[in-house]
View 1 (cartoon, rainbow, N blue to C red):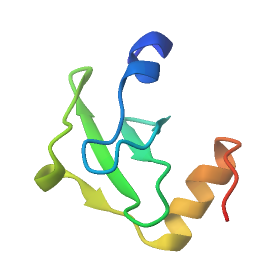
View 2: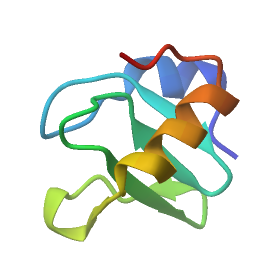
View 3: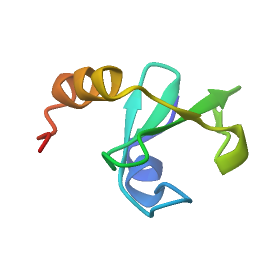
View 4: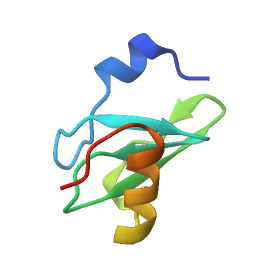
Length: 71
């Protein structure tokens, strides 16, 4: 499990946007890129080429679940 302290230090390597912990993934709060990074054995895989780009509707649901505003 990723600690709150580590989560506060991490950011999206593509846009430098904040991340939210969603299950076993980290999701960028950046609406344009909507990147999701997986976590394996408690280690975030923060490689852009290994990330997944979420559909806008998927991203919106995750942001709302984490109390983030969507514009």
